[in-house]
Length: 538
Ligand code: XMP
Image (cartoon, rainbow, N blue to C red; front, side, top):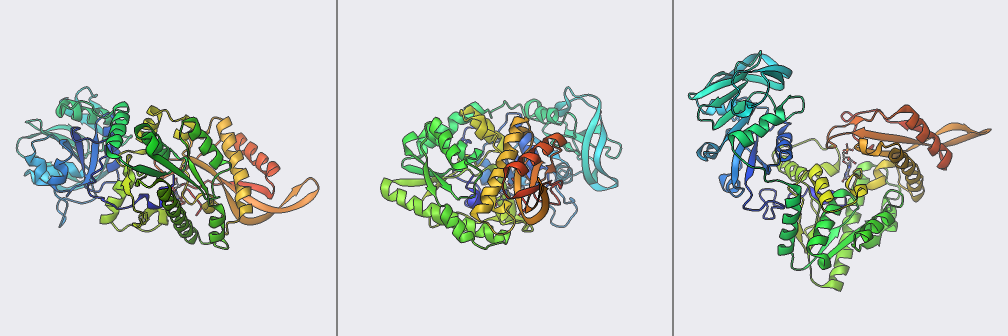
């Protein structure tokens, strides 16, 4: 999608007024983040179970939490120890609210510590799988077996329970691996029910929501589609422009707006010249079939000119980012002159971006690539921002896309980086290099689809290397370019494994590329995971 350079904008990163699918009547399971690497997973699991949840920093003020109509609290794990100076504390409103609470790992320890029990350094740290023995099948443990494997990751453990608590499960190194208060309001688990390695983890979370908190599911895609459409219809009273890339996020935004305010939507497609083969035409055709007319801008000359002779990846990113924003701005201004009342700019910002920008405010992370900590769309754009997906995860966006009738070819399209093929051409970007890469890439993708492998990988693409190697074709010596193929499996693009594609398949693709793509005489396959490599080569 093309909201990439500005999607991680920090605009109202506290609590925005536009609550996407969240209406004031909908109750929210509030997940308070104490810094665990698994916090987002808790949220995803709760949503997968059909309950609306939001993630907030552990020190979010009550006035913001209250606006969400909280129905239960889940306290995440985290790296701190309750005895650390300045260790994060559970805010007092969690206790005063009278709502059910589930503490996970650090969340459990903080609960025990703040309610008068005792947490100490564990003589044996537990990392990885452990056998859990349930001693009381009550509340979160209704219907689960007596013994099963759970995932642990802690160095402290509970030694003395607060008054009014009892133990409900133990493991070899955690005598209090799960506890509850006798009034059934507080539950705590030392292990991580949100990770897939914990057996019955989803049952435990479901039990907390339904048996303990007595909630009913309130997060269904069908209702969500209707709600979002109604909300957009109510809100939008002028024309709205949208940067449409043909990726799933901006496409879903386009569909929502098309259903809500069909005659107010102006989708803009910027052809940077750095797209996949025939991408522009395909996007236009696909949307025409859906009844959506796209305003296309061919800005490729401008991009190639700006990139002339530039080899440094970060430079390329910056130039493409700025050029894109300039082109978009100019086109938007032209359209504003024609249509007068354009008031809104829609973006496909997703929840992980919102969370990331919140976390980034608190933590200084190392800069890997600019797209990971980019700035915002220039403030000079005189439009109000609409972000209907800012509370959704990618899989929810896909489900919503299905609900809205988007074709599978859009819904399951591999992610494509904002700077496009420019970061897949190592070194300087020219029209000729783009054209070679487009041909090789198209063969790879076409074959992945034919072999039914396309949907089994997170992303797959070709990379053009700035090296020439010697080959032999017929009786002739050749001295031509190398193409690297990259295919990875991943859940979210944050970590990835190289895809173990069948050798016959790779053999077939390599042969086709060398035979059909002029200027290429060698194909290699990238077998590095992320980390230590990144998915893209630049
Ligand atoms: P890396 O290469 O950082 O990529 O492992 C992770 C995911 O992000 C995509 N990516 C980008 N997306 N603008 C984007 O919108 C960018 O500059 C960019 N760089 C990488 C990449 O395709 C992968 O899905």
